[in-house]
Image (tube, rainbow, N blue to C red; front, side, top):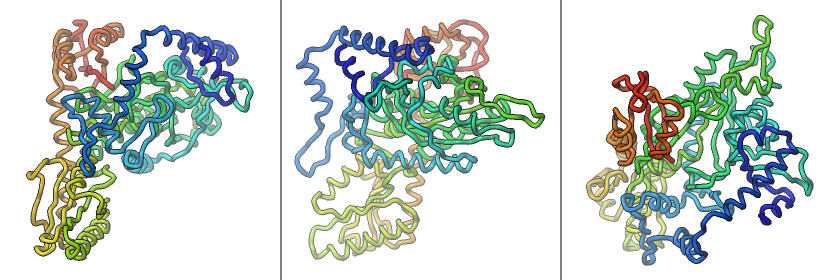
Length: 556
């Protein structure tokens, strides 16, 4: 309580807002007072919760931060097997593969170069697709007046528990609290209302690459953090039909990326009313199945209708000279996609990266035991490196001498590099090399006698990368399909969810019944898939006629 109040007196303090619903809809000064009261209440509630003994908490923290599998010098680290503890496996992979680390503020993360390179791969593919569909990049301020969020009641109510507020700056209390961007629909509409005057200004197609803040209480690197990176698209259209067309079109862009780049066989569909974005008429989603069978919402696209346009008076003169409200869409993919790639493809050895996204597609490891062999081996591997680079392959030549070849093999296997090339003196004499694929373990994944000549070598490696991409997608699809269960009754749903699977069945239940499923099973309605299988036509929950099948699953 005292610590929270002290924080409010600090200049430039950023503090979380935790009040709900109508409390955010009052005047700005009232919001400050209510926000402080909510913070005090939250602090008291946290203090009142049963806490483990101090020594136990310190031991738990030490165990979480302690590197696992630190073997002898020169040995690769060991990762907890997925089957033993999936959550521990995930954290081990993120740490040992140097993807991310914990930030000094609880719930934040530092994205390390290898992890950021994965995000850059996501960015480059999506940014190209956005520009090909006519969108332009822009940037909007991170600090948003609280009054902007108050203009759209459903929007502010949905985001109120996650907001972070700036209440002081320059040593003075601000006239109006500023929200640290949780999403940008409000500030975008503030600007759209100034930019759009006539039907000639439409459609307006904007994308932003940015960071956002949501005050998450339970966090996991990449999957759910207090601050994360994403892109958010915002568009304005003359008609409702155009907005709906754009909403679906951008979801298809995400679906194409997931399948053809990330090798993630997502299920595309429509969210329920309860699960839709706050302030949207309808939300569409791509849902991916992780290695522990939980669902991950990998991307969403929202039809906002004219809800925000009415709140911000975003109107245009149509061809008949009449003022009309614009119709809008918004859509986004975040660094959560990186977590999805890890959990979709990884195995007990670590990462398995789809070649089209892997920061390093091929690693070349020279094997030199005698100085006399060094010159010939290095000449050969440098030739292979140059040939691959010329072909546009992302390649790394690891000629370091402080680690053994065996350590390097294990290290790059753990980091998910799709292809490894080994070249020793005997290989040079024979004019060949050894090529190993990451997706097939052991000797079965090794190919001997691959020519050192540039053209056949590059052709072989390029074909191998394409095959690995296809294999990862096929394996993920087979895993997904094997773990989706069709259900005809609520008992069958509960049984499927208890077994960790996705339950799919005809649904026409009420909002209250949907909430009951969540309370009883911890599973949520992930989507009404576009690809609808044949079904009985009777809701397994209510017994009423059902036009659609829905998927329920536990999720991240």
